[in-house]
Image (cartoon, rainbow, N blue to C red):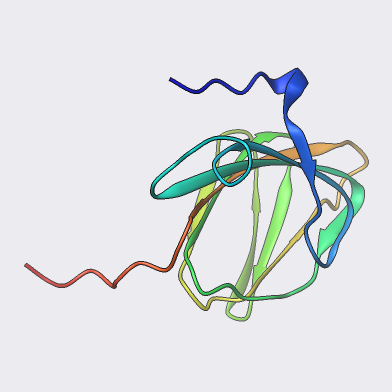
Length: 119
């Protein structure tokens, strides 16, 4: 078992993230994982990311406040325990459009997976 205590989680820098603090909870340099890593991002009011895609899917779960997620096909604001999945290659921008801090969990594969095939 590998435990990461929130108070001991390490900051990581994420390109094109503004007024945000990102913590690695599981995976990568935090713990040994085979398939996914988990991060927690704190967005200050006005905090945001650029509209950018990734080669792997992403899952976001809002745990505090409200986070707006914009894609090339639409925009949605997620609240407490709302979640969304972004497909590989789907560009996204996150923003906190409120006057209160917000926090979001991020789960991503550690490497690109093969697409699912129909059964």
